[in-house]
Image (cartoon, rainbow, N blue to C red; front, side, top):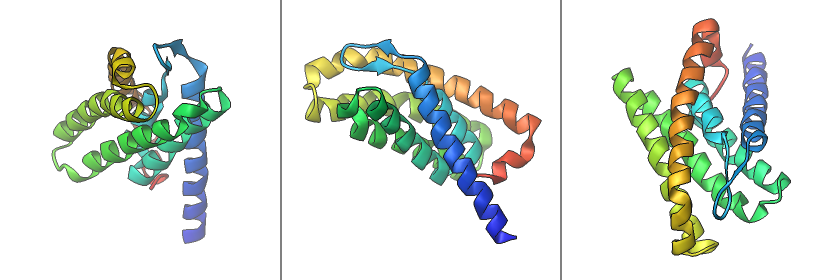
Amino acid sequence: MKSAASGTKVATLAVAIALVTVFTMVVRIPLGTGYLNLCDVAIAFVAFTLGPVTALVAGGLGPCIADLAGGFGQWAVISFIVHGLEGLLMALILRFVPRKGLAKLLAGALCILIVPLGYYVLSGVFLVGFEAALADVPGNFIQSTVGAVLGFALSEAVVRAFPPVRHFGW
């Protein structure tokens, strides 16, 4: 029985990685040094629905794979770090803050802050300098805000339609 459950979790992780990758690649709006996308919708959905390990791995690998496949390889490591941490921390807040309304609010706020701040600092240090990185902060703020709101709504709808989905992730 445990083997079947593990197999379901591995399959769910693979689907979550693919989901985040597709959400990252389908919509690309050029930004000063990179592009805006919908990855945060998928990452927030995974964090709200499937737990911290699944959110860390899917949140990190999905945008990283999309960057590598889409010609933005210089961003792959930064995307892995920023979005992996985003997914992990959101899911941990949801798991360990006892008041669920407060947990959802804190997790959403963290998503809205970690993406622009993470990209600003890491791209400022390693890629484009802080002046160029500053130009992307408003777009990343909008991307993460939309992602948190839509990801939460999508999670609520899926869990309402199929409650056992919560047991498919780590």
